[in-house]
Image (cartoon, rainbow, N blue to C red; front, side, top):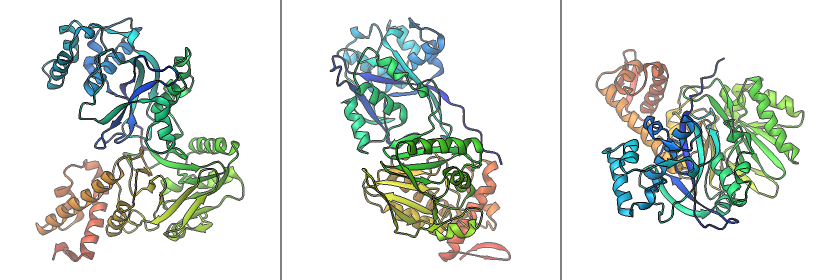
Length: 504
């Protein structure tokens, strides 16, 4: 078995904007919310920033240590100007607000490039205005990965950040400690670099601030393994032989002060199994015990590490799954307890976590999702994923059931985040569910049109309908078409005979 190769991170910069004259004990940062329309971390709270442009390296940066650092500073300054209208450059203090607006219009319209703008208006970037506080690399479980430089920057006097419509939906000045408490109350979602910055700054603008920023290995490009998008929910991606574009399957460690639930330990690889076991041990050492291992469904990339983890934990830990997951697994993975639709799994401790099981077939007959109403958290397994699309592959997969399951999830109240089986968390759950449903129905309409026009086989239909899909994926597309055809047949729109598929 071989896993897909993770994508190569692209260079990027982010700016942690500090308000001048802020209380050193309660410092304010400008926190933004990424647009829910973005494919990468849409709906997350973050800091302004983005990917490095080739032209960023053409800007001279005074007092920079090397060309790479200078390019990262230039990128951060440009992104800050494009997203918030804040221009951190020597000489910008002589510009009026109207002139800065005009400069931004020149940049956004393409009349002037970033290097041309800097030169034309006699501006100068200075590395002393950008304090380096870490370089974070997106973990390999994400199809989009970045090697991001983080800089602390004081907001220039007489400049007020204002979110420019586009990649960001909103922004505000907020004490860093208060923002971190919002995350602790599950009111916002954020990635580890943002949380680390909020906590570090929230502890005060002390002389050792930079040292505290750089005190963890992740600020030196070591990818995060345990990702806590939401308190008490650790996403631990493990490398698996899964289907592209995914390279990893998300195992979830859900915990409170006393107990731990483990969902989908899927890796068959020994090094990944050891890394997951070490993460579990860290939680156990703090006084918790493992309550149970739960499986969302039967696919190998979700169950491949169960036996290894059971062996590591010793006796007493049970495995739970739906009957239609337990039956096909047989003796390969022992299932001790069956979970049915509506069952509630409650962790007892200082923080009450009650997960309601939802039988959501379609991707697999025994597929389960788990919904926690208090925080609006949905663990979706492979029904909704953070990257790519979901394969519905008959006979285990059933498109009619899958669409019904999507509708069931769409009807959940107060849904705030989806933790999928692959890729990052989804902070725009209802928009994502609507996207999934409309995408499937649009495909179905095109498939039915193709049959009416004379296409008789799944291969013929793929050639007509899946023009946006790489030929390498056509075999998988044929399986998806078959699932749609079976649904259309059940709905009374097509039938299959010795000549192939035909419309009624």
